[in-house]
Amino acid sequence: MARLTTALGGTIIAVGAASPAEARSQDASGTASPYDIRYDVAAPVSPSSGTSTVSPSSVPQAMDRMHASGTLLDVSLGSIYAEGKFGTGSQTMVWSSALAARLRAGNWTFSSSLPWMQIRSRSTIFTGIDSTPVLVATNTRASRRISNGLGDLTLGAAYTIAARGAPLEIELSGRVKINTATTGSGLSSGRNDYALGVDVSTPVGRLTPFASFSYRFLGDTDIYTLRDGPAASAGASYALGTGTFLLASYHYSKAATVLVRDAHELFAGASTRLDGTPLRVTGFATAGLSRGAPDVAAGLALSLGLQKRNAR
Figure 1 (cartoon, rainbow, N blue to C red):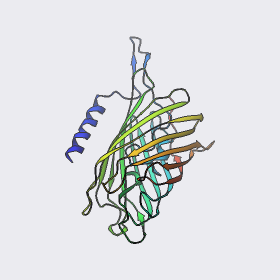
Figure 2 (spheres, helix red, strand yellow):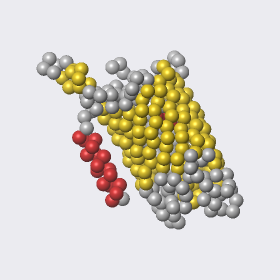
Figure 3 (cartoon, rainbow, N blue to C red):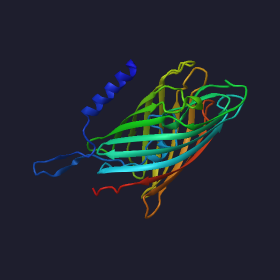
Figure 4 (cartoon, rainbow, N blue to C red):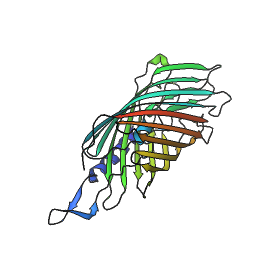
């Protein structure tokens, strides 16, 4: 908890020292200087900020960046199916569907997600931040057990900073996973988890490279001591047209215990806004590169914007 307090303090200091994303300096005539304009990067960023891997709630939010003008709200419903041996001799299946909401007010963004999960595995796997699975120990049962039900609620907050005179955007974020799953479901560690993250992105024409880093603080259970550790991703999005993007990235997360391996995986996704509607459709898939990650995963999400963006 001391580490978390120190990290939170550093984040608050950074936010307090930063200037708002929409601010513009003015000359003596009161006109905004063209050499000191703040940018709001509209392209997608990493779908794993503050989490351990991609999730049915973080992917659709990453694929639909909110502009900084006005107060905006959107909701999404996504599902992801993952399967693999996770370094064991038996198959594990994870199916997760999450209902998520996000509110943008100025430079602040607030989010929430609640998953329904089904896990079929001989291993011990818990719900993580943004409904991502946290593999704790492999082959802890003689046969596969089916665990299903509502998982743990995740709440998040982020602050956006845009650099002076450059199309660089930095987003500082914090997330907390609150233990809301029932004790008998087998889906939760029974403890709260926390994460601090930072995303950096900058457009280069239609291409927008990005990098993401987060640090997770996992609550220990009565049986297992879970390890705090980093998660990171890097990649780029490409704009095919207005509201249509492709995204590819690499993701890493430190294993939750010494009993499993770190996770390395590749991500690819595509997202488009349906013409004449406030709806966005997103499809995505991952491929595991290590024994600590699922072999394959695929998902689909539908997002709904509840308010129109204000004119700039």
